[in-house]
Length: 382
Image 1: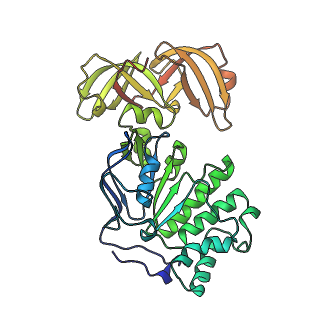
Image 2: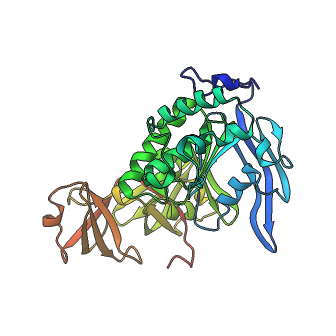
Image 3: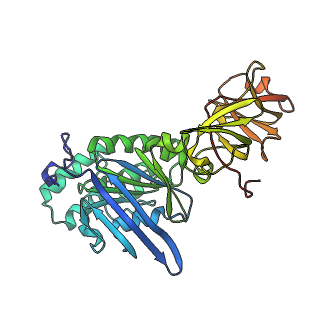
């Protein structure tokens, strides 16, 4: 690996070069807490300069994996490597990682500049170099002029920028982010997501990001690792995870999904055909391996893939409008149907949807010929 010199940290021409494309590697990593298995032989490679998100519900193991990368505790099995070096037994301060916590963990008795410079001070960087780097990173996170303020004098968004600056100023090999937006309001969270991603792209720093927020993961990531019960259920781009979920857990957890009762009609190569009322839907065949033709299957369809329809198109099902929810940019229409055990959710951008599809109206629900993914029916769905 060609390591960047400290004097080049945060300079506009910053780039990372290496013969190895993997920055962080988890190889069959297992972690237990007593009798509880937090991680079960997890393998994951994070590419250099990549923004990788660990997504999953509470208790799935995502924060445990992040803490193992940070060195806060060691694995019970497997190996962890950073920049090609095994770090299982390397203490946190020797891993050259930057970390940003949920609560930011700023020192309340230190100024903004002192908080940011702390990591440089403990590394015995010269005062002149500390000042240069602190000024550079203050400009990067748009806090120039606030270096003498105390944390209590800052807004939540400004405190977050200080925490990010402190993580970046040491020129880390890897940036670790543990749900850093959880304390922010919705509008500020959205703005900070854009800014953080922009900074990450400018610096090219490898980033491992933990969240339970699906929209956050989909909007920010190069790749997403969806986790459940200490395992990675699917690893892929945001589009792959959202449009082509590998199993019913991922299909249910990531975004909104309707589950409709269909029937498997045909499997040919990578595609299968599922019948649903008068509609025929082409889906990936991989999740249906071993399912017999004519068997019932569960078709997962996103709300925006359904529409309330025109009689000229094949009808997947029909039902009765039970609720309307106006969301500004779109309207959510809830439809009770025999094709599903719960109300279908239809998402439309039509501005007259509230007046056209009033509560109590009988409607037809349509689906395009190539939308959705199907899985074998299981008894726990009903």
